[in-house]
Image 1: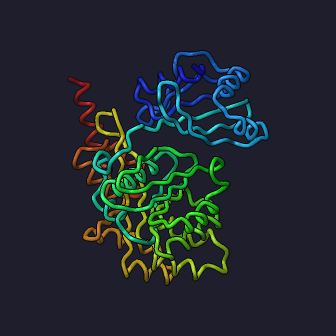
Image 2: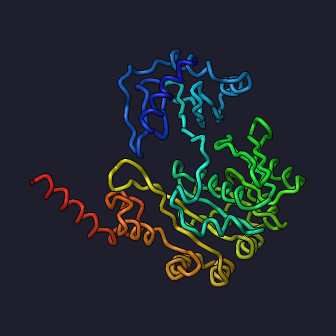
Image 3: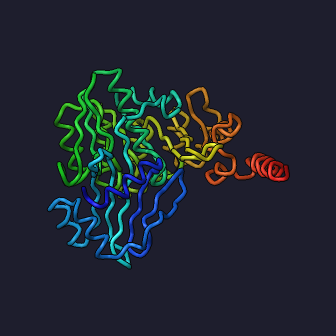
Length: 363
C-alpha cells in the first residue's frame, strides 16, 4: 500500500474534505472548512517526493519533473477517490487531495433549490456554475447530471480536469473524458463533442478565450452546455464572459449572453449551526427579457435589482439566500456574514448569536 494512503485514510475517517501535504509542515486536514494539522512530524522534501512518486504514472511523473503542476484523480487501496493537485513551491513539493464520494449526490441530498432541476432540463443554451475554489461547484454539477441520468434519455459528454464523480449510465449515456488522458484541452474536447451527437456537454472550466468561444458555439447549435467559472456573483460572471474575449467579439458575446445564457448560479458553502457540516447557499440569475436588455445596453450593474424581484422565476441574491437560511436555522449566522455583500443586514443576527453564547457561558 502506498504510504500516502495512510494520511488519506485518516482524512476519510475524520470526515475531512481535503488532505494537504507540503514540505516543512505536518500533514493537514480540512474539516468543515477549517484547516488543522495532524500529530506528525514536519514533512521533508525527499520524504514527500517519495510518497508522491509511489502513485504517479510515468506520464504524470515526466510532466511534474518538467516543472509543471499535475492534476489527476487517484483511487487509494481502500477505494477512496481523490482529485489531486501536485505542485512545487519555494520550500519543495506540495499536494492537495480532495475527497470525491463514490456515491453521486442528488439535488435533494444537497438540499438545493428545485430550480436547478429545471435548469438541467433545458434543451439548449448555457448554464454557468460559479464561485471560488472549494465551494462545491463540481458536486452541484454532478447532481444535475445525476438528475438527468435518472429522468431523461440523453447523450451527455462530460469534459473534466480530472474526472471526479464517476457516473454509471442509467437512462442516459454518459461519456466522461479527462484532460491529458483523453484530450489535450477543453476547447479540443468541445470541438470533438460536437461531432459525437451530444445533448448535453459539461465543460469542467471555461478557463480561456478559446474554450469560451467553443462553448458558446456548442450552446448556439442546439446543445445544453453546463460549465464553471471562478467568478463570484452573476454580474461579475457576465462581465468576465464579455471581457474574456477580444474586443472584436464584444457585441457578438453580448448577443450570445442575452439570447443563449439560461442562468448563472453562484455558490458558497456556509457552516451549519452545529459546526459539524456546511451547506450550499446560492445566488441565482435566470435569464429574462429585462436582464437580456440590460446586458445588451451594458447596464449589468442594474442586474441585482432584477434578482431581488425575480423570485417568481427562481431568482435570488446571495444576501437574500443567506438571510433565508439563517432564519430557517440551517446555517451559522457568524459564518454567513463572511459571504454577504451588505454585511449590515446581518448585524442583528450576529449580535444575537454572540449574546446567546455569552449567556450560556455565564450560566
